[in-house]
Every structure is written in structure tokens, then in C-alpha cells.
Image (cartoon, rainbow, N blue to C red):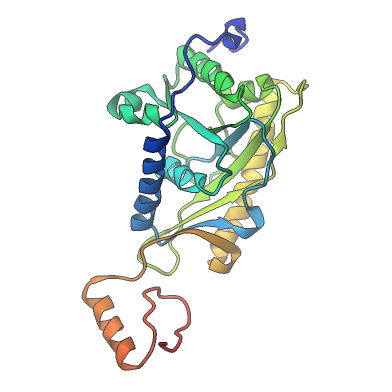
Length: 275
């Protein structure tokens, strides 16, 4: 097990993650387009919108139901204040395979090892020393179904929270249900931010438990909204792919035109007269 109490954690041994703004901007555009091609829509719950937090380090803790989670986070970044700078850990093997990720805010760690735990804490604390920094973490450390309970997180998130000197921990729930269209919905909801005090009294284990409870509560709230299948409960961040496509949608389009109706590829919603 990693010796998280090592005083060397406070001494950076590597330069900060160097982000190339133009490359990041291009990749964020690509992420939104990629999400739009594969989902009916990316929606953020109206009762769990991104809070308007002042400057200060922020750690967004996500559940981890699928491969899509980091891409969804990237697509949501454009909804955050432009002054924030975004970072996230990634398996060193993945970073070696896609080195450009290191130029848009990702940093490599060795998963499941003592060395990796030290790498994660050292680099995270270095990043969070800046009040503009936002650190995105899928803290379950593996793929876990969005409805699994209780929510369990890797212990590193508690060690990180205990060592932060200020800022917030923000739980973010995601899931990908199929509603009424061919493509699934990408749903997200932000929970209540947890403010980190200047002198945190909680132990690392207590911090982990507190964050687990906050994320589980947020996942439960999102699950309730997902089961209602009501788009009006969400704000659409990215409008994606609708309809079946092919010959079927071509026939529906022709039929709507002959009837003087506006063609809507979605299977849900009322038709309106064509202008």
C-alpha cells in the first residue's frame, strides 16, 4: 500500500502539466462533435446544474460507468468559466499510446501501485496549488454500473481531500440510458459542492466516506430523473443524433412534407405546422 503520509508529497519533482491552448480548444470541439454523433443528446439535470463557484481549486469526482465518462467531461468543460484550467489523471500506458493527451491536461499515473498512488497525489497537489485549476477524477478506478450500491471510491481521493488547503470537491453523476430514440442519452448531474476547510479535521478515511455518500446521493437523484424519461428536467448541452436514419426516416420526411408538417426526426414530441 502506498505511504500517503510521505512528506515528499509536498515537494514537486516534475514541472506542471503543460497545456497547449489551441490543441485543447480543437479537442474540446472534437469531443462535442464526437458525443453528438453517438448520443441522442448530452443533458445536464436542471436541478443539479454546475454551481457558480468563485476562484479556487476544484476537484470534480465522477462515477465511472463506461469508457465515455472522460469524453462527457470534456464536452461539459465548455460550460464552465473560461478562466478555469482542466486536468485529469490517466493510465501511463494510455498516455504512452496517445501522447497528445499530455498536451491537453492529462498526466500519467501507474494504476494499482504504491508508486502510482504517490504520483497521483504529488501531481494533483501541484496542480491544485493554482486557484484556476479543476481536476477531473473517475475515483472508482474501474468501470462500475451506475446503479451499483453502495458507491465505493479508491482511497486516494480521501488522501487528496485531506491535503488540500482550500477549494471544493464536486460530485458529478453520469449515466447513459436509452429513452425513445435509436441512440442513448448522456445524462449528468452535479451534486452539492463540499468545501474544503483550511485545516481539515477529517481523516483520509472519513473524507473518502463523505465523498462516497455525496456521490451516491447524486447518483440516486440522477437515476430518479433518468427513469422519468423527461427531457424537460434537463438542459441540453449537446444536441446529437436523432431518428432511425436510412429509408425509414426518408419515408417519414416525405410523409411530413406531403402533410405540410415540420419533420422532426425524434420519436418523441409533437409535430408543428411547417412555416
